[in-house]
Structures are given as C-alpha cells and as structure tokens.
Length: 358
Image (cartoon, rainbow, N blue to C red; front, side):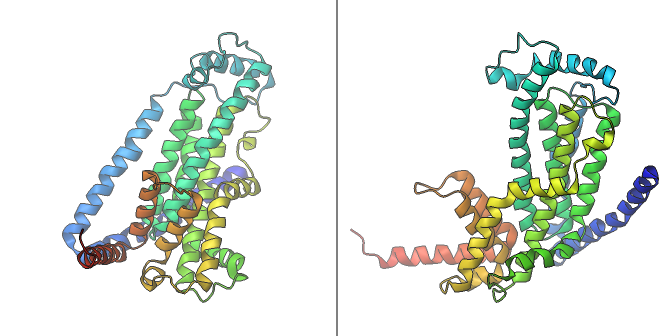
C-alpha cells in the first residue's frame, strides 16, 4: 500500500512540474516583453548560476566519503557506531572546537556525546538556510525562481551537513534525500502559496491591516516564504536523521511528522514574522510612509523594515545588513527601486546646491 501511495505522489509531482514550467514561461514572456536581449541575458545568467550553485555542488556531494546509514537490525548498530566514530577522529569541526577526540571509544556513550555537539552546529546550519529561503522566496514573486532558490539552498545545506557529520549517506539513501529535495522544489515552485494565503491573512486580520495597499500581495509573499521554509526544514531534518541516527525500527522514523516540521520552521522564522507584524501595525497609523514604497514596492518595504528590526544597530550599518535591505527592495520591484534611487540622488544634489559653502 505504501509503495502504491509513493507512486501516486511521484506521478502527481509531474502535475506540479507543469506549474513550475508555467511560471518559467511567464517569467520569460515578461522579460521578452521588456527586451528580447534582456530575456536571453537573464536566462543565460540563471543557467550559469544553476551550474555553479546546483550542478557543481551535487558533484562535490558525490565526492564526499560514504558513512554507514542507520540500520534496522539492532545487532548491526555497533558496526555503524564504530565506523562513524573512526570518521569523527578526523572531523575538522571537532578539531577546531578543541574536542579531545583521540580518546574516543566505540561506545554508544561516546557516540551520543559527539552527536550532541554536532547536532547543535547542524541546527545553526539549518537555521541559516531556512531563514535565507524564507527571506528570498518571500520577496521573489515568481514560482520558477522560487524553485531554483529552494533547490540551490537545499543542495548547499545537504552538502554542509554531510561535511559536518564527516560523510554522506549511501547512493541509495542519497537518492531518497534527493527525491525529497525534488518534491520540495516542485511544491515551492508551484502555486501552493496561494492556498495558504487565507490562513496567514487571518492571523494578521485582527490587527486592522486590511486597509494597507496591496496587503493581499504582502500576505501571499509571507505565505510563500513560510511554505518554502517548511519544505527546506523537512529536507534538513531528514538529512540530519540519516547522519545522526544509528538504529531505527522502521525507516519511516527518519521522516519527521508534519507537525514537528511546521513547529521547527515556525521557531526559525518567528523573529522575522514578529518584526513583520510590527511593521504592518505601524503602517496602519503611520502617515508619513512614502506612497511609492507602500503601493509600488510593498513587499520590498515590509522586508526592509523587518530586517532593520532584526539587526538593530546604533553604529554604522553593517555591510551584510545593507546588502539584505538593498536586495529586498530591488527584488521586490526593480523599477520602483531604480526610481527611488534617482529621486534620492536628486534630493541629495539639490541639498548640496542649496546648503551654503564654508
């Protein structure tokens, strides 16, 4: 029965693939309507980026030494532990952390002691990539680009986790993880976010924000980012289970429940969502908000303000924060971003001419 369900879901993935292709064609048609040469240049750059951020990392994953996968036979668990501990003795992360690995014994106690240390680092890796996917896919308004971002982030994250745990899984298990990445890419690249918009909107509806211009677009972007964050979280948790667990009574134990995935994704994005909530509250009473930003680039404006709240600083603005804000506003609406920069420069020039010189 389980195999039948898997086959049904696999064939259903081709249906989702249709939506990703549809988004790609819409993206290409938009670029071509602006300028045919621009369309060719952008698609060429996306192709090169895909090779650099997806194809090459996949080959690097295949070159990583293989670690034994979790076993379903209790009698073989000791062999899995022994081989993994031998690998841990050359683990660069443990060496950099000054962990005394020379005295490691092939015991469950020593193994779990090291796994606790590695799991803390794997959580940081997971948070980094899930947050990136939430930011980027929340701002980008195209399913095809979403799919590329999910795929590239998942591949990079899986590779980093394999390096952390000192080895990848077998080719068979690698195919299973790859299939989860494939499903995540298709779901994230389809129009699934539109079905979650109502749920996200209802969460904020009590805060009197329905009168904000283009609030539906902002809510769709948030829903899109949340869904994609949950999808990448699922890939991360599955990969971590393959790398850390040594024995499972059933391989289904390697796949976390939907409830746990959603809770984990929410904990990662909670701070950003809280900041966005604060920005939306402020927009309902703030009279000085630039109309161009609210109407012309609502998503970029929301994420820019949320990034400000996420990285408060009284000193000079850090470069990474400035880049995040610039990226949010540019991707949200490149045309409006360009107009805003021109207006800003014009104001600076006028101020310079008016101010008396010493």
